[in-house]
Amino acid sequence: RSAVCGWVCEFFILCRGPGSGFHRGVRQDRKGGRGVYGLRRSGIGVGAVAGAIRLPKVRARVSRDILVAGSSALYALAALALAYLPYVPLLAVAMVATGAAWISILSALQASAQMTLPAWVRARGLAALVVVFMGGMAIGSVLWGPVATRVGVTNAMAAAGNAPLRPLVRT
Image 1: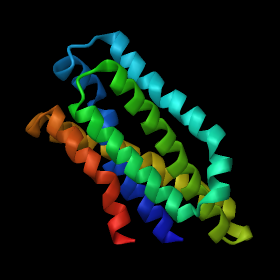
Image 2: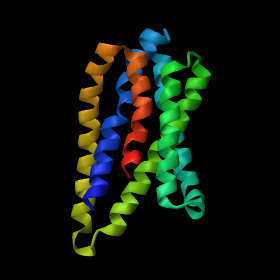
Image 3: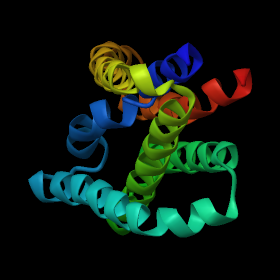
Image 4: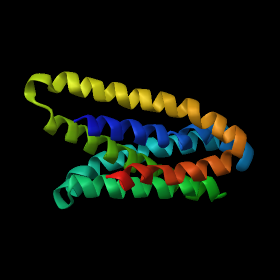
């Protein structure tokens, strides 16, 4: 039970890098403006909705572990694309992949927590999971900013591209 919370916290702290570097990456590396930033953010939402629609069919074919591992790898590839691809249409595709991976991982981890918790504590456990998720996002946002300032946005986003695979190596 605590393993799921630990995995969630580590994953979302480590994966917050691309989100933290979006605005800087658009301004500095891609010479884009608000429109490009909006397009990138919209891509996450489109990917999340598309991923949520597709999830029941995917879950019917693969185990939850494979879903999380595959989605983590997809998220890693998309984050690396954000670090290195200069073309806005390719970035939009990477953002859609990011959203689909994000919702797949979040859904699978919440389902794992829900299935492992006893009924009498399930609501509290899921509430704790949401707190861990939100806390991981907040901590990740705070931590990745100084990393991007020190090593540059592209290098920080590349490091964030490798980050989603770290929790998988331990499991």
